[in-house]
Length: 82
Image (cartoon, rainbow, N blue to C red):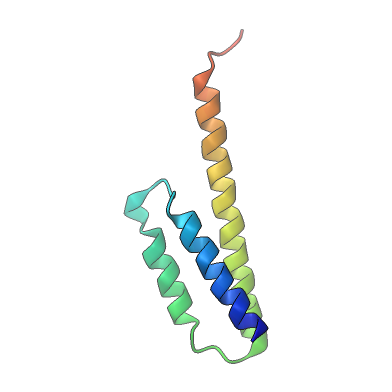
C-alpha cells in the first residue's frame, strides 16, 4: 500500500509540474499518463520501485528545466556588463 500511495503522490506532483511545461507540443501530460498506465500491471515490488525511481528522476529533471528557464529569463533581463 505504501508504494501505491507513493505512485499516486508522484503522479499528482508530475501533473502539477506539467502545467508549466514550456513546450505545449511535447504533450507532457499525455506521455506521463501513458507511462503510468503502462506500469499499472506491475506486481513485483522491485519493478515497482524501479518505476518509482524513474518517476522521481523525471520530476527532478523537470524541476531542473524550470530552474534553468528561470535563470535564463533573469539573465536576459539585465544588460551584459563588460
